[in-house]
Length: 187
Image 1 (cartoon, rainbow, N blue to C red):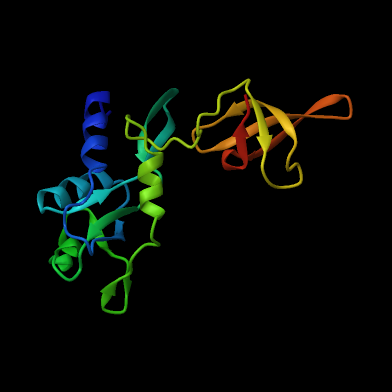
Image 2 (image 1 turned 90 degrees about the horizontal axis):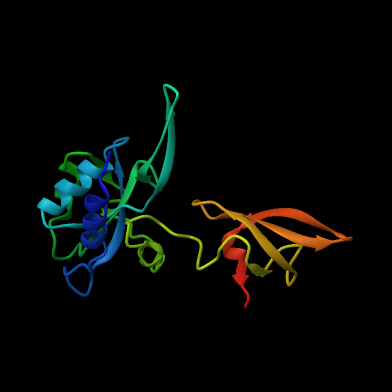
């Protein structure tokens, strides 16, 4: 099990801005199942800047329940590369890495802003935090969907970003499950 100190150090190192040049972009790489940590460590030793979005995962085994950090996209990671300056082909030979996601003979860049958004959502503990300042029991406004512009009370929020909101309809509170991105806290 990863200690909190190790996770914090990993998060701090992972969130540093890549210093590979102005043309550095993020690329996705396929990794072997459960080998995200191995691939990340070996890529760092080679001078690359990998990023693995992580969330908490609950594992049940032999009547024990354990919560530990796990890859949000199992089997994939992101790597900041400047394909004009760096020897990017060595990524494919790194322990734990299957290969970069390619388009023809060149690596396929990830949409601009996607990895940066994941980095912005990563907390000090190295885990993704989709709550956006929401807390159970607080009043929220629904932004989209069939209940748009309605006010409700946040009942619960899970680490994956799903929320249950109690909306006052017909003299009662009706539970509505939705994505937490569709909510905004009100004072």
